[in-house]
Amino acid sequence: MIHTIVPVLNEEPNIAHLLTRLKQTLQPFAPYRVLFVDDGSTDGTVAVLKSSGAEIETISHPNNQGPGAAFRTGFRYILPGLQPQDLVLTLEGDGTSDLAVLPRMMSRIRNEDDDIVLASCYLFGGGIKGTGFHRVGLSHIANGLVKQTLGLSGLATLSSFFRIYQGRALLRFQARFGDRLFESNGFESQIEILHLAATLGMRVSEVPMVLDGSRRLGKSKMKILKTSIAYLRLIARYRS
Image 1 (cartoon, rainbow, N blue to C red):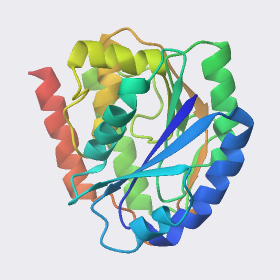
Image 2: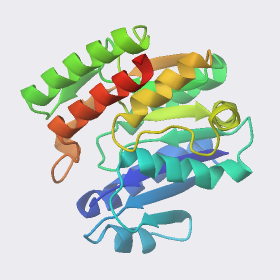
Image 3: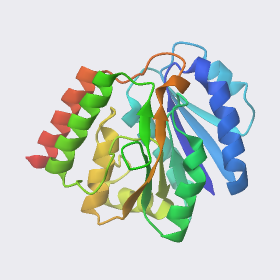
Image 4: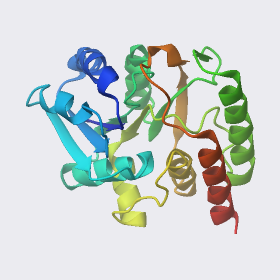
């Protein structure tokens, strides 16, 4: 079984196209389920999801708590029925994840038995399109700083939402850290998960992907200053 978790916040213009692409991509890997965690949307996101069919599951936060909180809600929801041999797919809700690389990610995690596989825009063969230079530059700086301070220098990217986890990996997280799994509520949560995976000796690998911001209708939900401060707080927490 593939459990798919997608956090969303005011993604009404992007949901329908994402659902179509996601179902087409996942069909060869059935059985699968798709869970959307609405993080306090104020537009028509939830209405679109509820009209999309019985196979789509939706959980809603009453207010915006951050993507890390949304992922934590999604993980908690699937954990009671999760089997070690299951896979858990996560991705952005704005359509910027290139689902064409999913078969390669699936091959990597099944054939090489890695615990987590990331789609990486910084790996050779990947890239970034349709994103402002200042965002790309800050991302490089933040990635470099975090890699050196949290012992993640072997990875090209750290913050990608587009990942596959082995079910056994998430069950190990739960056994070690409890139902909370990780502490961060914001975008820095994705880095925290990798840091905790490293402390558990998990195997993490990457496949290249082009991150195309032009696929997104509307603005990015990441606030540069807020996220940069959160990265620094994360570093301070784990280096103290």
